[in-house]
Image (cartoon, rainbow, N blue to C red; front, side, top):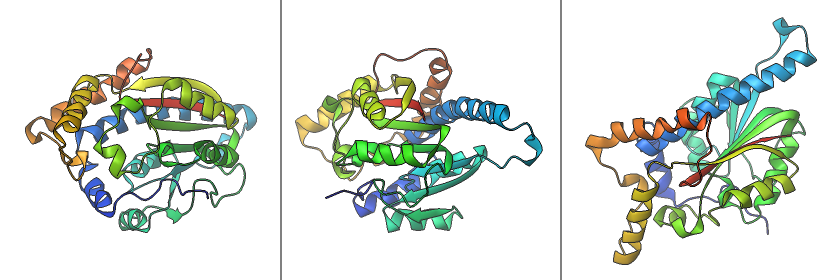
Length: 262
């Protein structure tokens, strides 16, 4: 049986996510990196559209869909680039989005409630790893993305980095770069960029997760693990990776960022 994307996380994790994703260093740094990639994607998409339509004065805003939008912080960031909306399987997550005035609806990743070639840009940000059939979900993203449009994918890296957050979020897999690229190509995409990310905190995260495995410590959510006094500094350090990633692919990291084109 096909599974929704993302499979609903334990109920309390959505409340934790909504509370921390505007300020926690992980979410802040990830959004900064994703925003940097999106600026390039948007520039490329607009350039393509300009060659197809000389009348720029009547061009509609780019249509953007965030698949597995969660509680909406990424969707708020995407809104600066065009007309953005989200889809998620969780009623609780969608309620958080609606409270923020975001355009969202309920839907499964393997059967997205949109017509073919609807969106200029689609995103799946820490979402694909929730699927039992990840290729099926990626094929659906490919279907609803316009020809010449882009998909931005962000997934966790390396199975040996598996931790508490993977368990409570009902992840199915952590990928290598080769594995996620192969799945995207099988779904019909051309992969233009694939790089590891969060190189900076790779060692501390590996150490922390190893320690939790050895001691049996299991927090409600790793999002609760934070050093308040250093949170801002950590966010700036993680965010700074975006400058390096403009010109360089990391050989390893906690996550993988992929830019794919239809």
